[in-house]
Length: 167
Image (cartoon, rainbow, N blue to C red; front, side, top):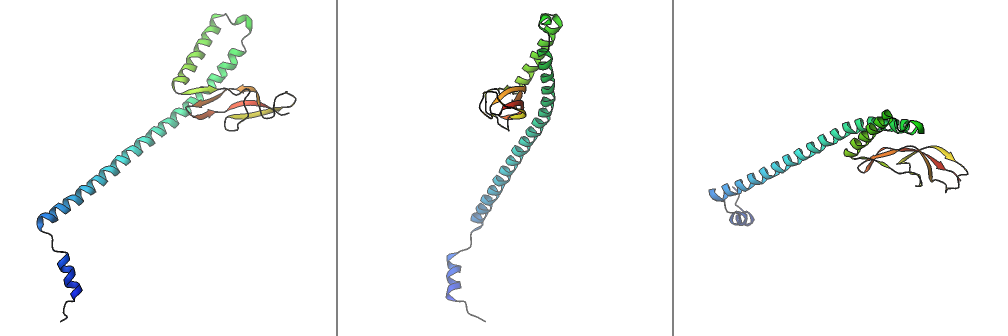
């Protein structure tokens, strides 16, 4: 048989066995910590799934809003093409009222048009379809807007279709 070393005797003396009450309290504290971690993980899971649902719902509504923008743009062009002698006709006023309702609906959803004419061309906000030489404007400045640009909150929903100066 081997004799215990002085070192092993010292460790046995330094770490006395816990009494049952202390052991139970230590186990309780570990269980509470594990429960708190699980509760925090579950709260994070719920938050992430709620954010994901909200993002997916937002993408679905954006798709519908983009389709509504096409109708708003068509109505803009139709109202711009009405001859001056017909602007007082009741049917034209009715179409204009429907157009205003559509614009109010878009605005209630956070969709707003943005101004492009006179601003520097930005490929994130504009889609250039023409470069116009000899316009007298600085190169790269938007000089004509063929279709409005729209944003939803802080993102571009539909870029503006523009002509840009090329001097």
